[in-house]
Length: 493
Image (cartoon, rainbow, N blue to C red; front, side, top):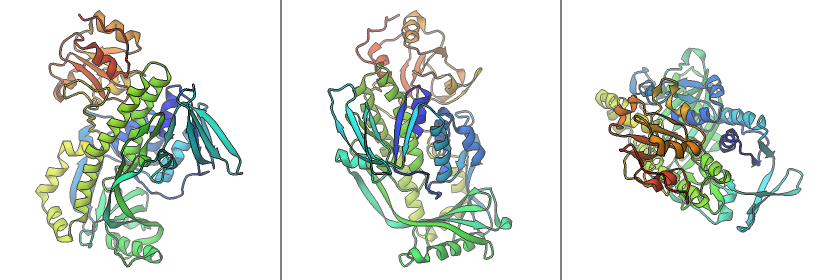
């Protein structure tokens, strides 16, 4: 749905084939990070998430027994790099319903709900090279001629299966437990995550609605089966909130955790996103958030390809390389770090969290806050990121500019920032391609842009090309950063 909405904002129509008729009624993923808020802003639904979710400018970890703060990530400190300097606690069924309402109200998106994807065939030489097949609720068979097929169909992806790909990686030895519980008003608090410090395994809870909390247990005892889960949830709630605080158990789930990734995220015109492409432990809350980042990366590249402006192979290969790199270097390491911390013996966790210096150091670590918020993005090299400058491939900070924020100035095909003026050579060529030009904000000098004269920013807010002179020394790198091949060279100053 995020991908369809992102394409619709660019004037591109799409068809969604969805097995379910309505969203699942369970909370599942409940925390969306600042980078995801930027994605939701770009697809036009941020205000609804802010209205219906619980905004958290801080992610505080507190000891349940006395509410003492053990760790505090203050997203307010990120105000100079994003206007989405908060996380939102919101159950996934509400996330689904907000996106679904937006999809149903957009005439450029066709939704076939209650339908089962059954397969596809490719005809590479045709104008519409993919025939996508599905079956409706009445059992009737249908086919759609398509230019691209995107498998966003989860961990057991039928699209991935048809491609003959598997998710390779590891399964963690522990079994996690989730429970949603309602607690008494007098025990309710909107300020922080509560940790049961004395528990045998890591147990933390997060509030996502008034009186409703998600409890997360790192390693549920092996002897607790499905019939005992509700009672176990009550026991954990009483340990965290007090013996009389529990009112009811709403939902529970126990499951094995994985860290797995497909060897490629695309073959030809068939592309994988989200859990269909990569699967990771919910430790650190990266799963749903990273899937939406996949969609954000892919949307402008499909748009550029469909418009005839970009080179299909170049752009789709860059999606595959960049998002697999993001999983390997951003998502998996953070998940592993949180997993190790959660799996540590109780005495190690107690020692670590009782050390106020460690808590303060972690809480004030801006680099760690940027990673937790998923605002730190560094794709490194990909088929369209070929420059040697270390800034290339990173997310451009959303600094303040006279017109508001830098990200709001990025147009359909990106933005060129120039220290003084871009010169007629660069300006005319890029302006002709629909890329606006603006002054390079002085605020960026504090973030490693000293000496930079020209910066091309991609539509997904990633730095695609940098020049430290006022003219284009390597025209091919500029075109490639935009996904354009076989274009005339820019005239050098």
